[in-house]
Length: 255
Image (cartoon, one colour):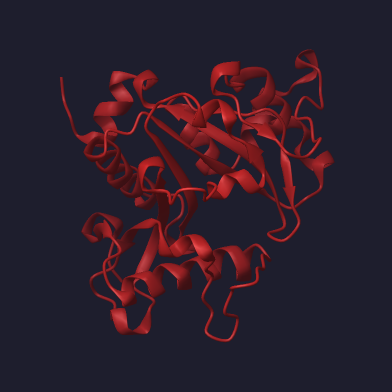
């Protein structure tokens, strides 16, 4: 098996690439997290939906594995640019959040979704490699605002009171960039004075921590996605607000 540094980062170009992305997504979102959906192929073990035909998929590939097995993709980011979205088709996130502030901002938008990494590569450089690929994509297409939902596993809100409250009190997006949940699920479950920030960050998923490190903010309210057995938050990143250090880290651009 190859190591993350030896792997290839590219946009899915072939049918095998796309099927490989869907196979990895099935392993993570269906087998691991218990998700389901009308277009999921349980027999073949592929997770897909109607957005796959219009989105780019950024993939991390192990060149030592046979693409014909559809097991060569070990990291995925699904990407939908605002200027590539078919007229009249909502963003995927609009099933959970009112995105009016973002859609009326006049800025170049990129929706991020279906981000996942093979279990054996978590905690290493695989996610960093995906973020490097994402940074290059953002530069190429002059993206100004990235957004998308990110998930906590499970739907028991009482178990998530600390991290959700921390997100609300410390990382709420300004009104001009603040999506709003379509469900009445408030995130400020605990007063700020009762927060245990150490516990909150310990219970924060790694992907959400990564967004926060580069200045990510959250929309108002959470969304309970029963089909995928998750509680979702909407994250927003203004690329102009990223620090020079983080920009250089992911893009490779030095001072």
